[in-house]
Length: 95
Length: 190
Image (cartoon, rainbow over the protein chains, first blue to last red):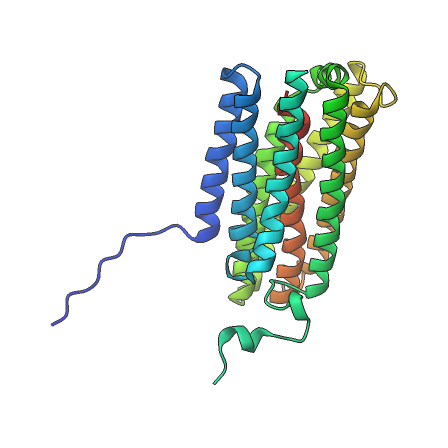
């Protein structure tokens, strides 16, 4: 007689995505409060924002199974905006 | 026998295979271009006028903006659950999830309007310089999109048709995505 398969209860994709988003948002807040302003803190905050954007794109917008072109375009939008913001702030700090 | 990808192709070319109505993705792409250009201008202004940008940022309170970030994340989660329920033909559940997403959207609007009132009362002058103007332009434009998203969700909620809900929630997630970048770029990066 085959043994019944035991499976761990798993969060649905939107539930797991929401949990990751909340953790990243709280981490950004912690960096903002605890770390001195500067290029490193900016990189952490912007990096977390880009990661959050990627989670929204893949798991909320549902582009995980969409054509790679769209995943690249919409996901790349966040990377582009975040990189520009970080570069501008870093250059302003160096002036 | 056709593959799943072939079965979902509908003759929209590069727009095939996306959730919701393909025309919504034309709108989403154009909105991302506009918001991307605006945030790019913010970066240039910060580079050219760092002192003015810092002075304006000192008047901004990131706490309500953080609250709104959590509100939109939660609202996006409810919208994603609504789309999943609609795809499973659980229309009553989809309507409930959408009602929750809309309620939190209304909370976002209320918090943002209260924040504007506080900031303007503290001396934020839209005409004081480029960064102040851009702050109000970007966040105001985003707030308009939250309002439009609420209208779209209200339109698709009663029938809770799967494709319509996916179309409406795709717009809502775009609004969420934009805010996730607007918040750090305008409030946190220094």
